[in-house]
Image (tube, rainbow, N blue to C red; front, side, top):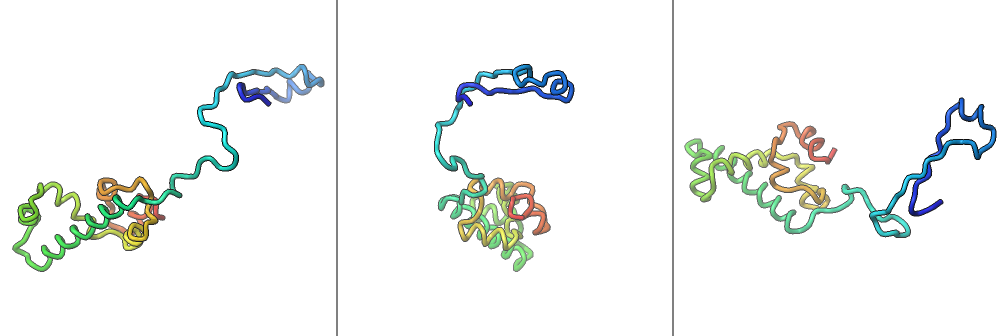
Length: 145
């Protein structure tokens, strides 16, 4: 076993029958250079194991709370629409429309975010983009299922 090459031994039924001697088996040596430093034990963990950082967690919870407030305002006052909210919040109407579906986010996802158990790569944009309406589908799409 060498650290600077990989040895590939070719075997098939025909080769084994024809060559009873181990030295007659075709072998390929492939040069190899490790790109990661050598470490003992586990050097990498799955990305799902990393928790969300505090700044991202706060940004996600703030976006969810704002979208819930916007939807509540629209439900309570039918004269209010997305355009009115956008003007009041000094935001682009497109931005308000993009974030509004967060008001209907799965409680399981919200609990994971609030508890700091959401994936590290979860962002407001990833959360809001193409969000399904069914909670189970949301959880599956975002990796909570």
